[in-house]
Image (cartoon, rainbow, N blue to C red; front, top):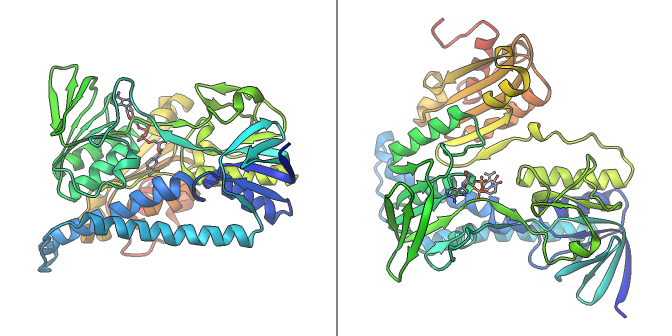
Length: 459
Ligand code: NAI
């Protein structure tokens, strides 16, 4: 007989969704066991958001150094010390990880460091102990998907391996032009690699507004990153010396590494869900509006739930479930209101509906769009970045989509999300004063234009 320990809530998985749920639940007076087989912080902290953004920052430092003369500064990029870049990245992770562990202790979360398996709707067995909860939250996250018939190796890698590569490849091929693909393409190019992206769909970051994809493709072309879209891979051959990717159009690409970035799959097999009878759809956990699974009392949050696989969505879902279980009646989460940022150079950020989706939802003649070019924005000119702010609005109504392209534009999505989620009309934003010179002014300018009183544009 295994030991049995009782809690109000048992959470399986200590990533963004799991730990936010655990932290909020103890804040609300619930007792919580949080079961994590690896490290608190999950994909986001150890293999996703944080390490990639650290690498992107090193990449930016390389670019700034290389381009220093443009700004009248004499400097020379003499090399990239990849082991040192990795140490910097790991130090950032280490500090955040330590902070998170301190928080878990302070919040009196019972952190169980073991691999857990669901026995029934109240019980997770981990490390020989049965953790029983009145409620169970599944938060097991995702893994980098491979492609059938393509073996991973030292040359054919997923983002997990790419994050700890201790050299810059001379020639990198990136399979998949989604978020992970374009971020790594951007990093490697800045660090000196020749980079080629192969994407199956007709454009990069296909979930974003088409104008953003086009702008990113243009910017990448200028940076020397080549893109093949609408491409089907027919074979991948690898040897000790190189990897060759063959395409259906008869062309082939040769590189030192091939990054496979074709999406992330849900980690829902092998954790006891089959016997529990939770309904799955292509491996993802089906949930209702309260994020409850088909088994009453069992909830799911984060990357295993169909939808955007983003850490901030997981945080929000974790908090939602904790509050729902505690009887707080939280407001439902709106997937369209979740901001999305791709941290490549240039950055692409968005919230709300793309032009295409708005046209589907409201009819094409019911929507209006406006693009403000960063050419007219002082701060962007100082930085030397091209890009734009694109607004999508319902005619005579609120702004339903904000789309941004350009260096540092990701930071502006905070204002964009307020505009979209508070259903602001152009006039509501047009009368707000934006600091000058700032890139936020570009958002202001776009709203001024939609409100019928453009300032820094030709009438
Ligand atoms: P993704 O779904 O964003 O992109 C995968 C891309 O691969 C798609 O464009 C797809 O059309 C393409 N693809 C699929 N099979 C292919 C094939 N056989 N040949 C060529 N192309 C193929 O997935 P990704 O980039 O792997 O990212 C996984 C998740 O991680 C995403 O949900 C993303 O939102 C999240 N993430 C978020 C980041 C951020 O918020 N900045 C950064 C990195 C990842």
